[in-house]
Image 1: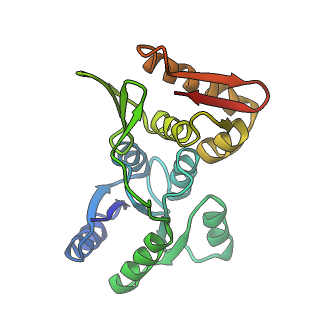
Image 2: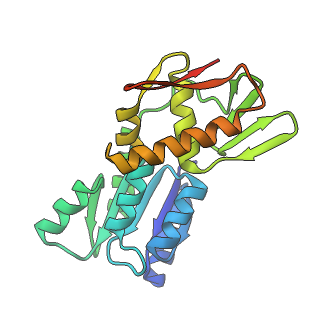
Amino acid sequence: MPTILLVEDEPSLALIVKDSLESRGFQVDFAADGEAGLHQFRQQCPDIVVADVMMPKLDGFALAGHIRRENATVPILFLTARSQTADVVQGFELGGNDYLKKPFSMDELIVRIRALLARVPAAAAPVCLLTIGRYQFDHPKQKLRLGPQETDLTNREAELLKRLYDQRNQVLERTTVLRELWGDDSFFNGRSLDVFITRLRRCLKDDPQVQIVNIRGIGYKLIL
C-alpha cells in the first residue's frame, strides 16, 4: 500500500483529501504545517509527499528544500493557489516533481500521484534486512541490530549507510553523496558528511571486520 505524506494547513481540505485518498487504497499520514511535515517525513519515509505551498512555520518550498537535502528520489507534488509562472518554476527548481493548482479535482490529484509513483524505479527484489558483518541493517525502519542490541539511525544516517552498503568494497564518491543527500558539495556540507561517517563508525564499532575507510580525495569505502 503506497504511503502518502499530506502536508496541508487548511483542516477542511486536508480531511477531504485524506479521506478520498484512503478510500482509493493509499495510506495517508497528515501534518498541519511544514515543520511538522518535515518531522513526519523523517519518521515515516513516505512513498510520496503532497504539500501545500503557503503554510505556517515552514512553507512548502522550504519543506521541499529540506527533503531534497536528505532524499533525492521521493516524489514531491505541490498544491497551491499561487499561479504565477515564477512560483511554478521555483517549485521545480527546489526539487518538486509536479504542481497542482487549487481548486483541483480529486480524480486529477489521484492520477498525478499514481503517475509520479510509477516513475520511481521499483526495487528488483526488496530486502528488509541487509547483512553488514555481524549486524543486521533494516533500512526502511532505520535500525541497526547486533544480537539483542538495536540502534536507531536518523534518516540521513540510514540513507548514507545504504549507499555505502550498495557500493560495499567499492569507493563511494564523496561528491555524489553530498549532492544526493545534502543538495550540494559545499565545504560546510562536506564537514557535516564527515560527522555522519564518524557516527556510523561508532555504530559499527563492535564488529572489527567492518570498516568505513577514507579514500583520500575521492570518498569512502565500506569494507566487509
